[in-house]
Every structure is written in C-alpha cells, then in structure tokens.
Image 1 (cartoon, rainbow, N blue to C red):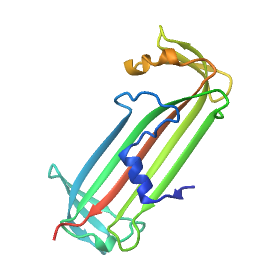
Image 2 (cartoon, helix red, strand yellow; image 1 turned 45 degrees about the vertical axis):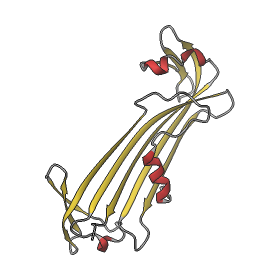
Image 3 (cartoon, rainbow, N blue to C red; image 1 turned 180 degrees about the horizontal axis):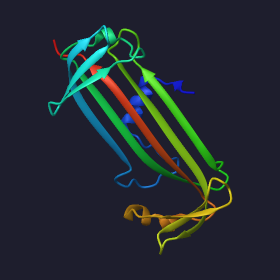
Amino acid sequence: MRKPLPLAFLLAALAWAAPAPAQPIPAVPGDYEIVRVTAKVSAVDPATRLVTLTLEDGSVLPVTAGPNVINFDRIAVGDTVVATYAAGLSFELSKAGAKTPGVKVTEGVAAAIPGAMPAGGVMRQTAVTTLITAVDPAANTVSVVAQDGGSIHTLHVQDPGRQKLLPQVHPGQLLTVTYTQAIGLAVEQAAK
C-alpha cells in the first residue's frame, strides 16, 4: 500500500535521487540521473479531461488526466507542464550487526493541495542489505551472501572510482545497495 508523502519530500528526492549514506563513501559520477522535459499546454477539453501538450521538438502529445488529477480546472492553454524523472544508485558500508540483511521497499505518492496548480509525484526506493564474505581488490570483486541466505554471489566492480575503495572493504561488513526512482509532474501557470 502506498503511503501519502508531502510534495516537498518528493521534490527533495527528485533533486537528489541517491540518498546520502550513513558512512560516507566518496561520490563517483554516474550514481544518479535526472531528466527534465517541458511541454506547453496547447488545448484543454474539460468534458473529456484531455490535455494536448506540445513538446519542445514541436510534436503533439494528447494526455487524458485521470480523476486523481487534483485542480484539473486550473490547467489552461499556455501553461507549462514539467516532468522530472530521477533515478539513483547508492552504496553504504556498515559494521556487522549495524543492520539486518534483507530487502526494504519504500514507496510514496504526493499530490497538489486543493486550489494549487496541479502537481504530483511518485517515488520508489529499494534497499538490499547483504553480508560481505570476501573482497579481492586485485580482481576487483566483492562476494556477498544472496538473499536466500545460503548461496554466495561474486560482484565484479567495474567503476574505477569504486575499485579504488575496495581496500577499505572487509569481510563481515554489510553492504547496502539502494536504488531510488522518482517522477514528478507539475503544471506552471503561464505568465499573464
């Protein structure tokens, strides 16, 4: 079940998709990506809730706004629709016993308050925590216990920035890999 979250929370997730690790690990480029697309509202049909958007390249995209779009009546020709997608991957090392191995999924949704311009977003974050059983800096590998609790998987570290960190990683530590995705949509009123 999705729990409603404040829009500010989702906007923060969009601004920085990868959460800050509890034990700092130097950032390596490519850990997150943010894509922003804008379009102009070129037509609105209140009876069918059809909004026609003209994208930056001139292409036209008809979109039907469902009943969950709050404040639909505030959308007007000339407004700008901004869609922002963010995805990020973060890594955290913890001492043994600091966390319990497993998978944690967090989801959230947000919507505009009544009377505001239409806006909303969704976010999903999946964190997998596993025990490190072996590290081989020369081979750029880390071995971890699989989620079934028995089998061992060897991960090949391909990123040169992360490879430099391998001498700091030791068997018995816990590795948490967190993948975050968020998308937000907002309608901005045209200048009068």
